[in-house]
Length: 270
Ligand SMILES: O=C(O)CCC(=O)C(=O)O
Ligand SMILES: [Fe+2]
Image 1: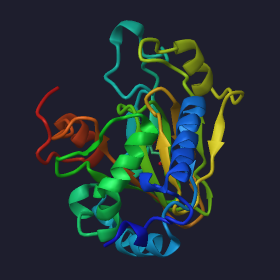
Image 2: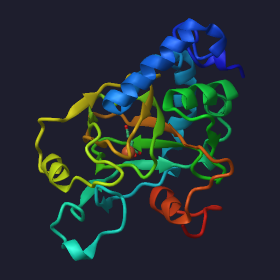
Image 3: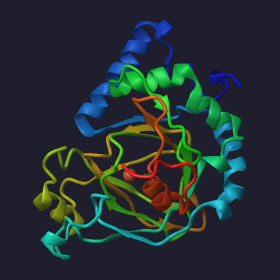
Image 4: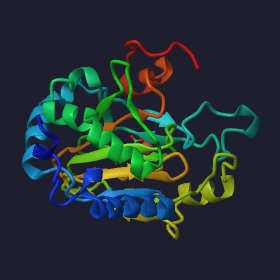
C-alpha cells in the first residue's frame, strides 16, 4: 500500500522533495511543539483510509485490556516519604482500554503509516530527531485506545518524551482532551502547579479538538493531560504510534503489564 493512499499528500507536503512547502510544514510543526507542546495536523489521514481502519479495529474491542486503574499523575511508583495526600501520590482514575499490536498487525493502513520511511522521517524532523525507529516488542509498536461510553483518562504526564497519535473515532460528546503545556520540567515536578490543576483550577487548561484523521505530535512528558468522560453511545478510538530514537527498543515488561494486562517479550527490568 502506498503512503499517498492514506495521507492527504495534497494538503500535507511530508516529502522533503516538496522543498519550500515541506520546510514550512516542518517549521510550523516545530513552532507548535515549542510553544504549546503540541502539533495538530487536522485531516492528515484521508477519510476513506480512516473508515477502513475503523471498520477493522472497532470489532476488536473485546480483545482490548479493559481496566479500572488508579495511578498518580507522574505514572511512577508512589513516594511514601511524602504521604498519601501529597500531590505526588494523589490518585487519578483511568478506565480506557488498550489493544496491543499483536491484534493490529494485519491492518495495512496502520502498518504503512507506522513503518513508511517517509512518514518516520517527517515525524522525526518535526520532533527534532535525526532518526526514529519503530519499537520491537510484540505489544507496544502500534496500539489503539478504546474509550467506551462513560470511560475516561485521568490527569497524567506520559513516561515517553513524545507521542504520535491518530484520531480514529470521536465520542458523540464529552471526551475533551485537556492539557496544560509544560507544567513541569525534567528536573522540577512542579508540585504546587500540578496540585492546582488536579484540584480543578481551570485557568491554564487548554482543550484540543481532534476530528477523525487528525495526527497529533505531543510532548506529554512535560505537559499534563487528561480525557474527560465519554458521553453518548459511541466509543472513542485513538491509535498511538510508538517510536524510539534508538533501534531495537522494546517496552519494559512492567509497562506492558500496566497497559496491556499481559507481557509478551517485554524487557524484564529497567
Ligand atoms: O486518548 C488520548 O487522547 C490521550 C491518550 C494518552 O494520553 C495516553 O495514552 O497517554
Ligand atoms: Fe498520555
